[in-house]
Amino acid sequence: MPKKPKKPTEPTGTIQFGKDGKVTSKIFKLPEEKETQEKRAFEIFAHQYNKLSPEFQIGDFEQLSENDQDFDLTVNGKKVEAQLTELVDRSYTFPPSEDEYLKGDYISYIQKEFGGPLYGVDESGKSTALTDLLRQKIGKNYAKSGGKPLWLVIFTTAVYFLEGHEGGQFRSFEALTLARHYLASEGRNVFDEIWFTNLITRPVKIWPPNSHGYRDTE
Image 1 (cartoon, rainbow, N blue to C red):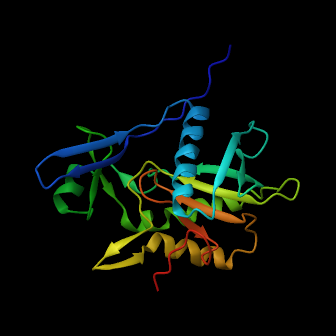
Image 2: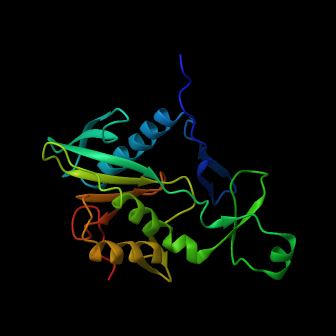
Image 3: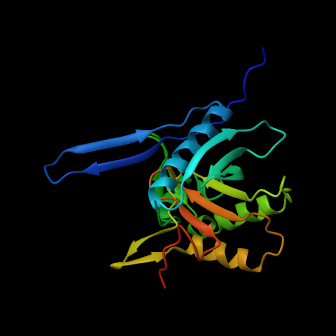
């Protein structure tokens, strides 16, 4: 029996510091078997999606074969197909040389696993990584089947946020703003809805930006 393909993944989650001094770690890691990993990522997205609003619910979903879209799901009783893809940090994180570290060439660093090396973050590349991924997926010209809506669900295990509080206000971060500007001018986009999840916070609806899942921050 042929071995099922593996897909490297990194731990993700949160570490919470309580007022009583207690530290609570909620770190987890997706399975490394590709099919199982993608199913688990979609399960987390569906669970988070259903918490957004009782008016919009994913009832059930089925993982499809390699020759089809990735998932068949039911949303409010209607059939929807979905492509699932991962945003990885390889394009904007780099192990710094000693000279780069001493000169402070990187503004921020991340540690991908406990006890592991530090990686410098290219902030500009991080901001455009989402748009680059969208451009790549849209360029594949996916075809819809049977008139069913087609979604794109993007997940990541990297430290990647599209919105949050900054300076006391809730706002969209640059990565989300750039992605929406790109989609607004991209005539080839076949996806009816595009969602993002970092598997920790609530999912963000990237497109269209004027309906369920989108919080107006203007």
